[in-house]
Length: 311
Image 1: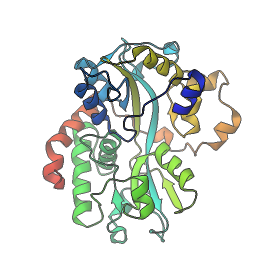
Image 2: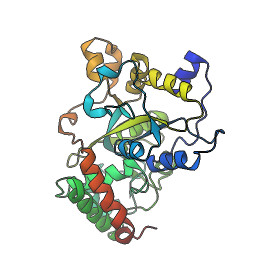
Image 3: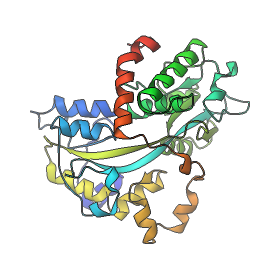
Image 4: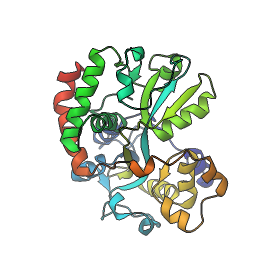
């Protein structure tokens, strides 16, 4: 996406921290309010719940892209402060060099002692959206009904998984996965599918959507209220929400927010549609509301350290 933008407009892009969690991105705005140097972010790409929070704190500014009307009202702030750009479905990646037997296909399978010292989430759920939603999905798979209840059930499940020796405190990443440190890891489907393409069979891997906890997460874009380059930031947003930009997300296995509009207009090439993974789980995907996510985040913030022994 960045390469396409640079090629189209000749504007350089300074990637501050590509692997930063949503909370880290918000903190970067706060830490650089009076700084117009290269460490001050112009734009952020964060989990859905972080958009309204950033707006409430006065950390982002409004801008409505030219394609504003073509994506759903439920995925954008009515005043243009933040707007959904793509979403993923939580997936499980399995390193087949380490897991020689049948791969797990759901959260229940991960309780098996044969998966000792193997299971990981991307990082700390108090600061990262994909990790937060991993806890949420685990909760739904273990009797949680949503919101606070899902977070409580998810933490209880992971606590038991850690007590049994199956959960790894190390954050799941491409490097840790390939090295076998976290041979079973959760992340969004577009991340693990892209990782599978990049690893190209070294190691071989399986990818599964856990059948007992299908959850989707929307990521939103926003422009910092203190952006040193606000006009370049607006142009970046125009690129992301153009047909070209939305196809860029789709080529990387993301579900672009304007997908339905583009399908209706015949704007998605047939060969691209053919490369997408099977969509049988999409219909089962749960999209937690902002209120449910907020309630879940509060539980995680309050109990994660004490329950998981994490500081």
